[in-house]
Image: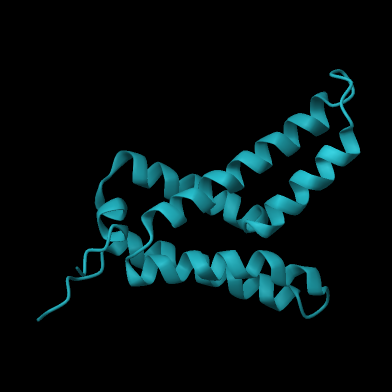
Length: 130
């Protein structure tokens, strides 16, 4: 039984997520906290490479974007809304780092746009091997 060919989009995004994980792991040689964003980046690369886990992959990207938007809005409007600015900012920064950090945020923009306008990645991640 022959496995279906891996789409070019899946290969490119998998390599980009893997390279981002390697960059974060390299930065972790100086500051151990960079291991936190490296793990979700590596998980995204593995999911893309294997072609499984559409819900996990998409959920991780959306949650990363959501935490980044809340962090930016809190830093911008926190004082005007009379919110505990530092508490919310710290929580969203920590959550964003646990979900891949800024490199995941940049890559997720392109991956989510690709998934929205094309059915190639969602079809591959639904388990094309089954």
